[in-house]
Length: 478
Image (tube, rainbow, N blue to C red; front, top):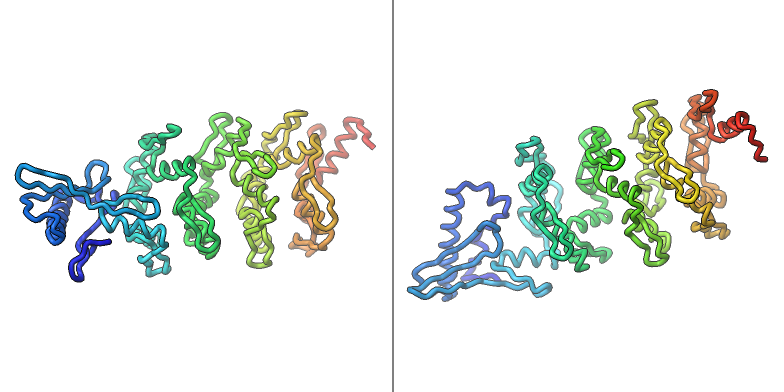
């Protein structure tokens, strides 16, 4: 509880600076702050009779690490340290000042008293509101001296500067892993402890980080506050906007050390690295299947649960993955943001674009360990491996027929439903499979992407090329 006298509380005469704000003050401003706070503290200590005959009071704030704030009181030759500690009843965490405890308790209570006047979004701390307001104004007052990149918050600048220096001053005591940012260390430590202190009030899902909860809450609210300045597309989190902006710029700053392939986001590089290492650290608890990415595991788990949390607002169709929903939405919008630089063909899905590029390069990075056959797509390799294993994990709920791939199951289900969602824009003909539509569109465009390596003859369909190749080889499979 705050120390009070009449209608005045300690918080009424207290100004708390964050570490970022403190760094911006000059020495004279810091001295003035200490003097004023020292005087205020002495007055309140006097009111509470903690200091009745003190001859000296010293308020120590913002030391080298700006950690615990203490009060030191001296009387004659004797001295003692008096720390005004407040304790959180949930986690028994100690705070030196009531205002710090109040801020912390808002994590548990969900109280957000600071409101943005532009979008009515609320925050538990005034510093969070100030940082948010810069998303509206576009203000980025903190500039990196090495690369001139600007930031809306000082701590974002400091974290960025460590990408230049390579400094990682925060170390995990359990696994010795080091981090460039204290928040990254705290989030990592929760992996060991299993702690997830941030809970969604709508669905009770818990998160290790507050930003994870904030992003999740936008699934319920549909809020997308981050907008691309080039195409006006909006996103629910800033990291997704940054990744999207690289589509326009073509920037791929993350490079694989083994094969020099570059990626637009770090998570794609990490997932790619596991192709080389074969590592699959994420295991399904129900069937023990392992995966190289957490997103693949989450998608797989929804096969067991049947959950499809992502819904199309236009046709109410639901999906297991947010990426699949985005791809589906482009069917309605006709948006094809990915363009091949060699042939100018456009694609609605980045994965289709990457696969197409391999037609030009001839790259087939995915190899079957049993027969050494190589493939352009990881999904095609997985389907091929089921030929060896005989696995057919996808079952039709209406007729119980099983399939080796989810796409085959979806195509089959349309036999029952009669659905033909893929329509040719030139002649209006509809198809149950996207591949059938693509093949049909080549009739209008005259495109023949499949070329015989022996005689250079080109074909509209891969099946036509395969039949033609048998003329050269003399193969008669039927």
